[in-house]
Amino acid sequence: MQPKTPSQSFTTVTDMVLPSETNPLNNLFGGELLARMDRAASIAARRHSRRIVVTASVNHVAFNRMVPLGSVVTIEAQVTRAFKTSMEVYMDVWVEDRESGERTKANEAIYSFVAVDDTGQPIAVAPINPESELEKERYDAALRRKQLSLVLAGKMKATDATELKALFAE
Ligand SMILES: CC(C)(COP(=O)(O)OP(=O)(O)OC[C@H]1O[C@@H](n2cnc3c(N)ncnc32)[C@H](O)[C@@H]1OP(=O)(O)O)[C@@H](O)C(=O)NCCC(=O)NCCS
Image (tube, rainbow, N blue to C red; front, side, top):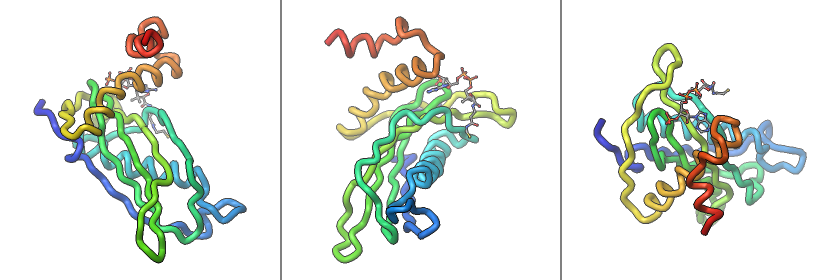
């Protein structure tokens, strides 16, 4: 299969925060953001694989800033690395200042998706060819994150997680 670049899966989703999506402090409810990110990430994974995709795991989410009611929120998602049937999707979440239009990074997250056939069986996807320095950094770190996710899910023995072991040996 021909490799693809991360930019071929780049997905941007912009929406605003409505009253029904907030917590008692009138900030965006965390679960609502998780769902929005899941949708954006699944579109990126679908653009990379051109297959049905399912969320395999949420590997990392950092809620660094509150997102107030009425904010315009943009989620940027792209596939950082493809393995055999799974893909890592990295997301940056931005909030736009109402008056200046300036964007501030509010959150970031990393989800894993698996491409499946019509019966739900995992199916191979194209590899990724990272181009920019940031894409290369995220590509390199993705194997470590995948191993950590598999270890935490009980699907890989910690002793087999070579990338994690290398991290602690440094
Ligand atoms: C995700 C799913 C397809 C994996 O099925 P499986 O039987 O574990 O299949 P495999 O062992 O062949 O794994 C398939 C790929 O998923 C990866 N994977 C499985 N669990 C993972 C996890 N927790 N984190 C990261 N990757 C994972 C495997 O490493 C493998 O990747 P690779 O082929 O690129 O090496 C299956 O568990 C599933 O359908 N889950 C439900 C998905 C869903 O409904 N999501 C929405 C939740 S509401």
